[in-house]
Structures are given as structure tokens and as C-alpha cells.
Length: 111
Picture 1 (spheres, one colour):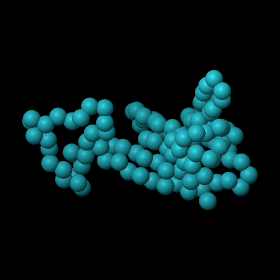
Picture 2 (cartoon, one colour):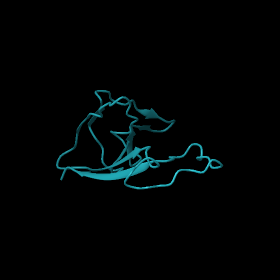
Picture 3 (cartoon, helix red, strand yellow):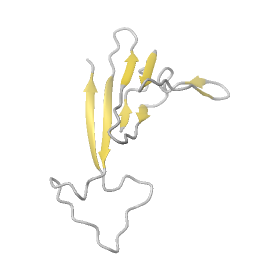
């Protein structure tokens, strides 16, 4: 799973499964993925054994973020709804890319 929101949205508090991320310090600046943001991506989460993803956060003032969630399931070839033919014996999936996956994009609006 990947969770994204506007890079301008800063969160005074943001916990993922009860844990808060550390800051990133460069020679000139200190950044934080949730407090002083520089990228749309908030987090990447790999669920295992039915893990839950629990987010606890606060926002400033009237600001209500809109999140985009990308979720991948690695069942493209076995998914009965899609009917994708199996790979031939002489074919091999590409390494280091999202293979044989169905990606779902969801928008979560708190507005």
C-alpha cells in the first residue's frame, strides 16, 4: 500500500500503528515526512499475515486532507474477473517492478 496527499499538507501529529517517524536532517535543513513535507507520498506499508494499518493524525485548523491510496494485490494471473492468460514457459517477469499485480486506486476525502 502507498498513501499520498498534497505535499503542502503538514501534520502536527502522525502515527502509523502507534509509531512516529524520525526527522531527516541535511546539512542545511531538517525535514519530516509528516511535519515538514517535501513529497506527496506519506508512506509505503507492506501488510503481512492480515496486519492492520492504523493511522492516527491531527491537522492544522480547518485543513482537511484528501488521501490517495494505491493498493496492490499480486493475483493478476489468478484473478477470475480479469482472465489474463498465463505466461509462456519462455517468459519471465521483470525484476524489481510490480509484476502480476492488480493495482487499485482509492481517494479518501475527509471533507
